[in-house]
Length: 172
Image 1: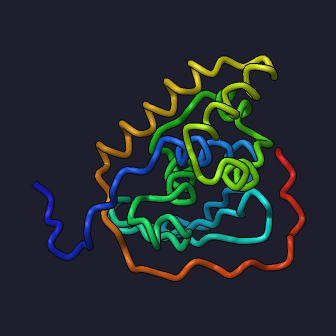
Image 2: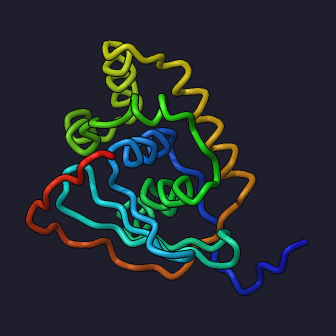
Image 3: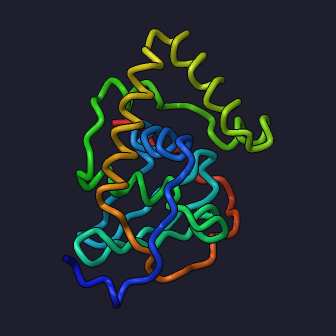
């Protein structure tokens, strides 16, 4: 049994859309692992950079995105950094299928009704020749990996203010 007395509260599991967003961030090349404990994720609109810190063998995670700060569930930037560090490796075709999705725009358009956003994303990826069911299966596998990891909340940091739009990072 692991000693978790020095760790914060466990993260709530995120809505499924956050796993899709994390895989999309990987597909866009917006995730940077800086070292063994730090990563950065640029927002889908390019106007924010989220800081992610990982400690205690990956079980203690801090992220300054709004969902992590206000909602208490692990947000997409932390999930993206965990994936980039090898928590789970979705196939390249799944990551590619979720590249170039305007996440913030869709969430705004559907007033954060994540089911509607997921339906729109499924339709878009299918029109682009990808299998929405295969993507859903991989997203479930990521959620299972998160549940197995059972991460705890690290320090709480306020989300970044919007900055001037930075140029979008080129996909490798």
